[in-house]
Amino acid sequence: MPTLNLHHYKNQNQPYVAKIISDGKGKTSQSFLPKVLVKKSADGTYGDYQSTVNEEGFYRIGNTKPEDGGYRLFFTTPTGNKFPFIKDNAQIEDIKSRIARGETISQIVTALGL
Image (cartoon, helix red, strand yellow):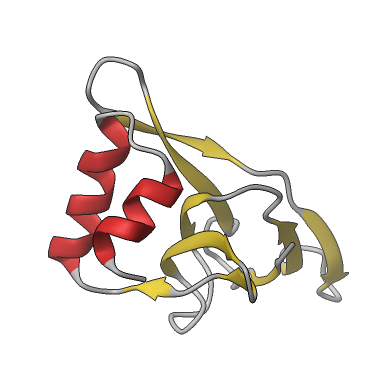
């Protein structure tokens, strides 16, 4: 399972990883994953965190380095785990709408050709 390293910048909100889930009413909501502080600044106001993704899904990573943030899709293939960034806004909205309709991650991956 992938472990994400999240950098917490001084004077900013703490970083987070949230799984995008269906609310059962045709919309999506977020379920925040726990994180662990692995390194703290000298003054204790910021630091680095880690969060582990334990199941397939569509995740939003926020309040961290720009190259680490954004949306990622986690799925398993016969050759191993895949965790690509999804950067295209239209594709992000398509995945969210599919999740809202109750499609599984494997159905989404097949539909997107990933």
